Image (cartoon, rainbow, N blue to C red; front, side):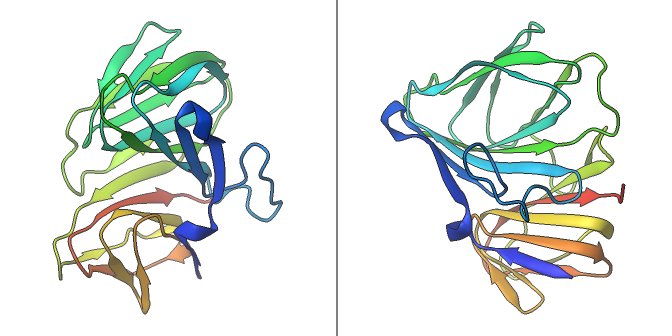
Length: 218
């Protein structure tokens, strides 16, 4: 079964006066919908827009796998485990908050920053925090998490067809461009939630960038 959620259906959050605009695909903060809390292991898929100099001051996380994908600009990351990095388009950043970690996320550049941040529930709570950044991940290279989940980054050219991974739960998020999934066309910010995916394909209407989560049943 496939359920489509359009970009315009996301919950609006953030703090515009502070240069922060947030768009949430799932219940988040003051926006609560008991029928839209999670999908498989995925707890959040947030599009964040930060003006130059804006950002999120130090704040805590625990028992969450946090994966960040920069769309444009540069994200400065610092955490209480001593990591300090700049994340750029094409990089996959993972922060496993485990038993607890604090971090800062800022736009220290002089151009706007847009990134997609996804939170997933780990298979087991607790443990020690860990951090990883993969620079310039190649197209279709899977990235596995300790959450029974795997991220696939796809960048199909116009007219190109590509397989959707089979899985108990598959989440498709369009970053840019347009794709066709079955009879449905999806554009930037649109998402599809697929249960029991098997033998599906997507076709690029024009050049696209798509994040796909393949998640096991729990």
